Amino acid sequence: MIYSSPDPATDPYVAATLLALQRSSYAVEAQLVGDDRLPPLLEDEHRLAAWRGRWVMAWDGVDLVGAITWSDHAEHLHIEKVMVHPGAMRRGIATALLSHALEASRGRHVVVATGRDNAPAVSLYAKHGFAREDDEHVPPGIWITRLRLAP
Image (cartoon, rainbow, N blue to C red; front, side):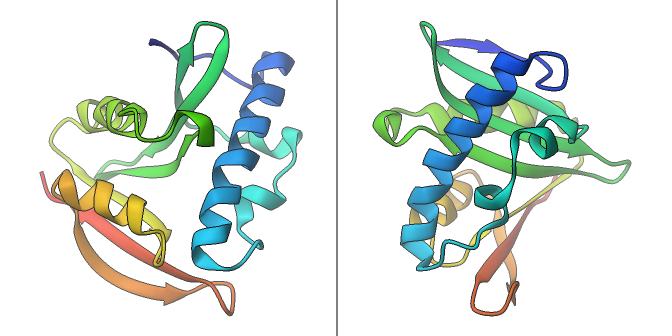
């Protein structure tokens, strides 16, 4: 596995490849939560590339198989997205990507949100020490679970 941090705003190929990965990954979550109105499924290439945070991508040869993105704040690191291609799931890619974000946290809290009914994601975060904080209804009909990892 090769890990890289290209900026999708400066490389249209990376932006298009990331968007395809995002759509396939979040389609799995949409099935798990029973709703296809998830914001990552509604995003276009320009909006994806315009986001200003940190990306780490996992490549299996020339195939993009996973990505994580986060934003740094003074008091915490906020994981925005974790995505793995459906054909590459259950190979430890999400765990490897999560480790990149945890290394970048440098002793700060790490926060993340995922679909409440996305059992694989909730389990992944729990396995790494994240504790459930609360559940929220956003947008109506979709429940998310917020989790936090203490330093």
